[in-house]
Every structure is written in structure tokens, then in C-alpha cells.
Amino acid sequence: PKDASDITTIKTISTVDTFVSHNGTSKPALLGQGLELSGPTHPNDLFVGEQARFQLLSDGKPVGEGIEISILKGDTRYRNTR
Image 1 (cartoon, rainbow, N blue to C red):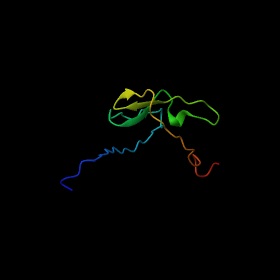
Image 2 (image 1 turned 90 degrees about the vertical axis):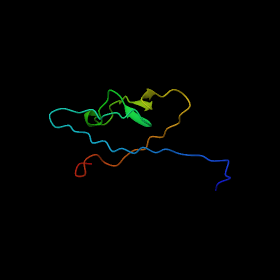
Image 3 (image 1 turned 135 degrees about the vertical axis):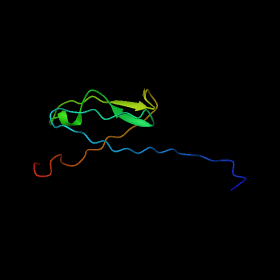
Image 4 (image 1 turned 30 degrees about the vertical axis):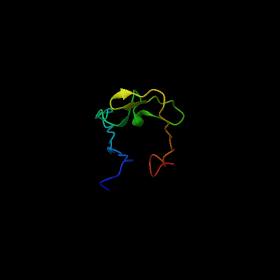
């Protein structure tokens, strides 16, 4: 409404990253907008039980304190090998 005073806006940026691992791994391009995941660990280089290191970025800068995230376990990696 024209006379509304308590207004909140939300900006959403959605991306889909494809990780290529034929003859080596590639790094996804970072947009420098919104929340992004970066870091030295490539998802295709991981084996069960190995430690992974990632960095959470907000608008291209490392995120400090004050942001809470949740990590959910995905499904099986290879559909025919459980």
C-alpha cells in the first residue's frame, strides 16, 4: 500500500555450479555477490573420511561472526556405487 511504513526487501541470487573433473579439476567462478562458498578443497577431490576446507564469502569478502549456517548431508555420490 502507498502508506506502508514497515517494509522489508530481500534480494536473492541463485547459481548452479558444475564441477568438471576430466583431466583435472576446475574452480567455479565467483560472482562476488551474496553468499558464496570457496576454498582450497574441490568437492570432486574428496574421499570418504577426508577433511574438507571451505570459505564462506559475503559479497566477495570473508564472512566473520554473526552468520549462522547449516550443512546438510547429501545423497549418495555415485548412483550405482553406494
